[in-house]
Amino acid sequence: MAQTLLELKKVSLGRPGSLSRSSRPILEDVFLTIEGDGMTGIYLPDGDVRWSLFQVMTGLSRPLSGEVILHCRRVGFVPERFFLYTDLTVEENIRFVAGAFSVPDPEIDARMDDLLAFCQLEPFRRRRAGVLSFTEKMFLQLAAFLSVDPELIILDEATREMPSRDRERFWQLLAKSCASQDHPVQAVAFLSHNRDEVGRCHRQVDLGKGKGGF
Image 1 (cartoon, rainbow, N blue to C red):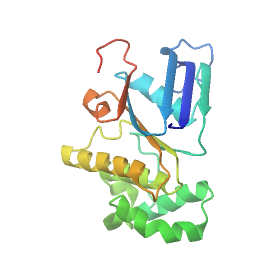
Image 2: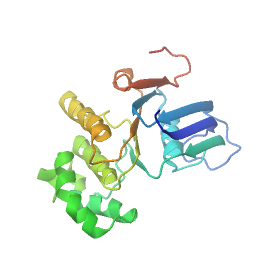
Image 3: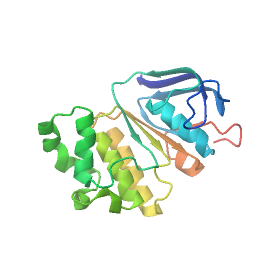
């Protein structure tokens, strides 16, 4: 039986950046369970709602009400908005994230070559992140969090601006991350406004308030 990695119980969300718990909810009574057995796609057409849910699921912000229960040790995240340092190289950004999670230097030294190869970033290892394409930036964010061995990776619109060929490569990498014995990733949660992208996942959750189903 698959382990439950994340639970949302009767969660209500406010607008992104809203700190007041008296704010009017933009999504209410969300019940969501992420199991450790593959990829879960979450359909949400509204960008503000989706970004708020992403922040709550990753622990970057709190819900207006309800419970968010994490059952795993570590969560990685890949937002559509690139959050790493544009003036650092690919390798330096990976080392920065690994260091923030207290991964010992000798450990990341030993893994760097394999990690860059796995995420198809070896040709860019000394390139500054600011000059990377959207696709390369998403691969970099994924590599950075794979360096800290998360059990769960949560993504928000990570393929939105990718050409179809790059999109296929990215989805293949996500699937390999869940299946690889070199990484402890048990599950991926993928948030998107695109039903086709959500439909690539093993299970789908429609939070679009009845605007169609799977």
